[in-house]
Image (cartoon, rainbow, N blue to C red; front, side):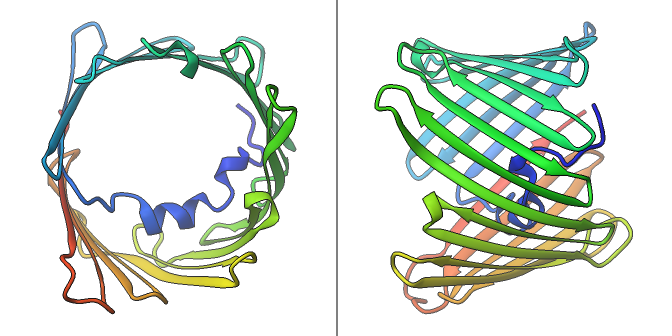
Length: 276
């Protein structure tokens, strides 16, 4: 693939991940292993409240083909086929969920040095069509995305964004929800390995005149442990501790609570991911 501006979904992703990724409110255990034939198997069990669910996923890669199959306790089977460079600088992704065939989707991505185009079509009688385009370079990117519902002949989504990326920082502005919200974010890495960082994000919803300002960060306590914190102007505080208990295996403990309503029960989550 070319070193171009990236996908539209990459705009603002670094700041979003720092503020949301790995913050959980349930109990999760996942165990991964590899077979002699190169198949990666992952078993996952999740308990949220009084409900327990689980799934088993298999992934196999052969040359430019990647096959993913996931079976959950609800008897659903999700199959994803990813083909890279069938045509140079392209990626094709086909997904199908059984028994609900209407959730199938076919996606095509094209990567150029100065542009990235993505289109996705739902595999049903009156499909929804998603289209995104990003122009620029790895340093500066400008993009837009839209969703068109063929059954009604209307645009159901349109979003625009811009980002500026430097080796140690990234800033982004996204106009979304059909122009009803604008979000600006900035992340700055504090070390060469990019394990410690500070982030700020402000979102304004024009229809309600509501502003949400969130600050957060991550700090590498040592080579095996990362601490993350976040706080917004509504008083919601989140904390996360992630520790590599053995090589490639992570223990994550997360909690979020409302500082303006300390009588409410905080949300608490723990996850253990074991990998060989």
